[in-house]
Length: 312
Image (spheres, helix red, strand yellow):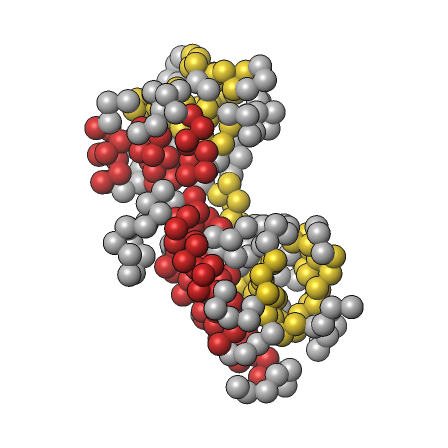
């Protein structure tokens, strides 16, 4: 049987990796489990507001995080999806179950599972996922060189996708159900100034069509319906917290975000949370990293106060 860890961290984005570094510095026996390293940070084409870097891609920043963590004796298990988190009787810790390794036990747990892309929910979306339907322009944009694509959404993530694709694709259609684009003013100006980008306002996608791969989409605008011939559809309408594996004892808000206090404590003693999975208002890479550090320090303090580890 595996040993009981001091801390198990669920997620390896900025919050989870930062928590891992701080747990290691407190000499806690730490296990990090995650589907990938970097989390949502890897979706960012360009990061211009992370302290210490004037400009860096999300993928590069995630690699810097990984390199930092690898300087410490923290076990990192990638390619794992957490399927359940069980709360044991008081003093017996937690059981984290993944799709590959079965059960791991920890005295404390930090949930840093982030968010997953929000689905559009139209016919054809599931059928063509990975065959023209994409949720990460940073990952998939190069596959659509010199092709016609659509970006669904009107916020910063959609604008980032449109800007990235404008240098790769033949034509980019931005489809938003709002009468104007949202997001940052600088991004809006760049998108509107691009000669290859066309914005469809007050418009909703009705369906995604194709054969083996995406060939087009249908849409409804103000009093009209139409079709677009595109080979790629990038859905950039936000994301939802990754909380489906949590037990009912964990308090969530109306958005299904984990409710935490100023010390990253949840409604369950010994269970902490950090990053975009929580109800912290701003969702930024630098904030997630700071919240991960706070969660680790709070977990350490709780373990010491509970007599589960010695003060180090």
